[in-house]
View 1 (spheres, rainbow, N blue to C red):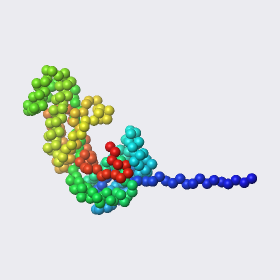
View 2: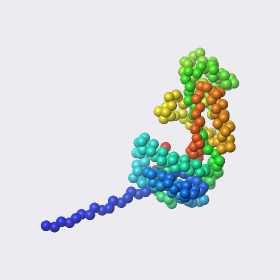
View 3: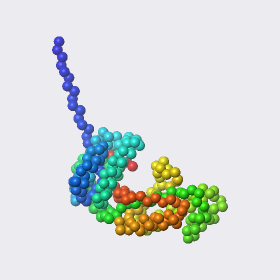
View 4: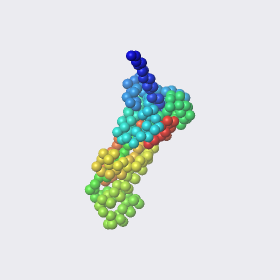
Length: 272
């Protein structure tokens, strides 16, 4: 009796793409040592057109277009991916200006990354120059319940305040506070925008996302010169005193996610 052993064919490793974290002008190899990207794998640099893309390997069975479409609906997966991506971008931002890539920007290979750098060289270089010596700061404004409308509606008699006074008798206390908070949030954003290089107002976060017990009336991002930061922080404090119906929270500095045009991808697209 004889038998023939069957040898199972070796399983081929999944194709691997390239996850883009961000673009910088230059990065020292030592600065990337020990810096982990997606899946805990070390990041590396891809240089082209006088720019450097910091990337990490992205197996396409997890980070390809179809798997990503499914994974981005998994909140636990999405949180892990976002944290890993941000950790790299944040480390780069601490060394100098960086253009952060949008989450889930995946290219097929290093060559495609290099082509993207060459195609967008002028835009990326201009953005890096604009971000030099500046940082993104966030200011969130949360409604403070129970503050009497009369104590906060004395801000110069603007249009919003005049409207609020006419309508006060017809509104509930809660509605009145929300109206005042909305007017105050507009005023705070306008003042901070004038003190910053640039400003953006994002949609208020849901309480389940913000973790705050009070509703959010302001979710602003501001690009601030390092030299102007003391004045900016003092202004935030002053605005908080001026508008006691809002609790202002200053966070940062952050990589300038709000003030860049993100590089595109050729595998995963640009899912949000």
